[in-house]
Length: 165
Image (cartoon, rainbow, N blue to C red; front, side, top):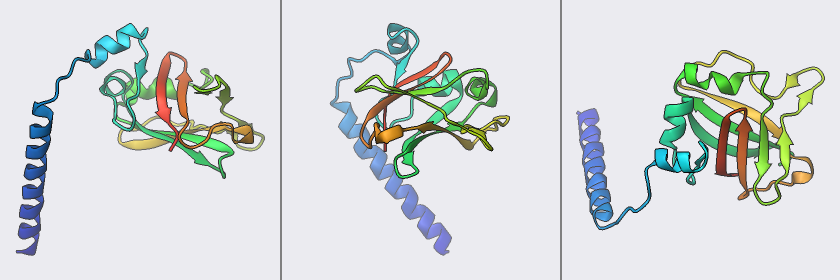
């Protein structure tokens, strides 16, 4: 009985929330073009709008961007992404492509470091759906800080406007 009551409350909360969202968006005017039009205007590159997942990356690259986070006391940055379609996401796992992170404020490119006993600090596996993967980029001198805007480039994969958490 308790489970049914909590499910009912959850459903009521979701319905009420969606009602308020619909009311709030009803008065808003959206003059922006669709994501495909924006991607074509940017030469195939899609801007990443804050923390909202982009449908462009889901459809084209088969991933959902989790974010960029400082690790190792800010000496490195971790780019994390969830694989949704393992076939489309294979391009991000191609070892022949050298990924890099660009600080948009300074234009500095940060590479994936290679450790003597470990190798490149990126995963070398066959991608599986619904798993989160990462790449680690060196951040010498803590050049890129929390709140910085960065871009990630891996071959033809290019994402602009990620904010470091």
